[in-house]
Image (tube, rainbow over all chains, first blue to last red):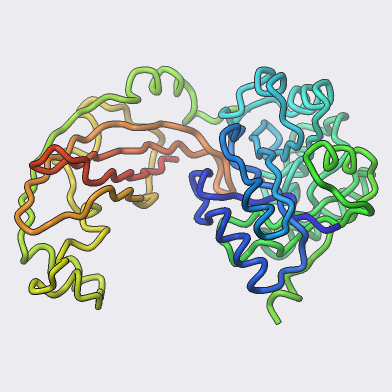
Length: 213
Length: 147
């Protein structure tokens, strides 16, 4: 099963895509993913329910979050009320170690995203402030990366022994599925996704070339 | 690590979010409606033909109606520079020729964000438009980015 683990809808302040338009685009263009995770910026979207859309289009649609820390942005999957209470999702300076620890303690899965970004990515922060021990997985393929960033993410992830996942970081419909993550088994819900991520049995994919044909 | 622009931001949010600071009225004329639609290159006759039975202002019409002040008079200067982050409009009922719109400007939201260019603060000015019948016509959010 292939999921795009990093997408934004109009619920993010810079998102321009409606979730139903994502679904229509995936089916219209035969995008090679089985579903996607909405990771809205600096918030936990507890209101939206995409079950009807998921049924209508035969897609897995899950919800996570993209929070901001002193080491860059972090994707969080398996958000619970306990995790929402653990730190302020709206802040831009949450300590990375605290976010990772809170995620682990509440059963969630957290991974820094676009870590190869110049100045603001995880690895740029590593050069200035040193490594954070609790990091185990990073987003090595990001659809919003400029040349050189994913290459740095991949090489540094290998150097540190991190697992790598992929996501499009799409904010408009035509970019969904540019990057994704392939899992060995089917995933039906957020618990299944968290379990699959914790198992480590996944790999990042670059699907952009297929879509640009 | 927190950059300087976010220092004291919690207090700024607490003081200013939700504060209404201006009120303005706008007379909607055929000339203004046509000028806006034509400037956009609009071809739909509903917006460019006054004889059309459903003639109305282009849905984005209210985005170019601005208050006399952008932000409250004593609103703090955040950061050293800024750019226009664009406008978003939620349209509730059509704007018609002859309408008188009353707009209230408020500071809707202040929030930080980090990206490739570092830490920024977004200040959202919201103009809420009502017509002479008391109907809420449109809500326009103008994002101003400070860094």
